[in-house]
Length: 329
Image (tube, rainbow, N blue to C red; front, side):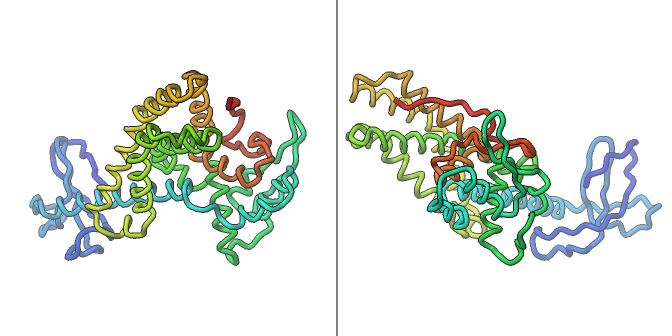
């Protein structure tokens, strides 16, 4: 912690600093002096004088080491957030959520899904039938012992992300910000291509379309697989930085690829209109406007006969409320 002194004098204050991530050779439990002035603030090693003495030992190497340690913590956190974000979007859904896919597709089943993961729920009927999830059960699990089931914990954590209530979504620089910073645009284009392949398979197999998407999709797949690997966090820093840079490049290429994709589709099939295709992309982008909503869309694919808007918010505000609707033509 850097302290700004009220005068140009340079008083010292002793603190106990635990620096767990700095380079080896620094005593993590040592006492360091925080030195401040009106112009500068720096960390130096303890003075050999008493507190009322004026001598302060300047230790530039220690400054550099501490700065490196802080940067390492920041980079490590960013890598964890990127890995978490992509994992929520590309990894298989938790088994306790997928298990509901084989059950009846109605609101009672949807309510049961939440109850099985420790959420207190109720049914509401106005303005339309919906499942309401209570806020306090997002903080304290209700009716289950989460310590006895890792599968339930995994499923519950996913549902907390869906509601925007996971601890990783409460900080300013959190997983939601990571999603917005580039992953969202990549994910939405992937979902747009997935939709096109489901309704216009032959058009998407046209060599011109394949040429537009091939390098981007192949490179993105390689990048996301690398990010999912444990070595992304604990392995070679230079390799991890390359993957992060590549991911940003793929995101920056989205507008150009989308434009080329739409114009080529219109050339292949003259019955298609630009506004029609853009409307569908906007619909997908709106439904996935936050990481919470993107998680919601994935869960709803398991109970696909339940409309996403049926997740009520009488007791807890779900991030999916009042979604824009659009029809695919």
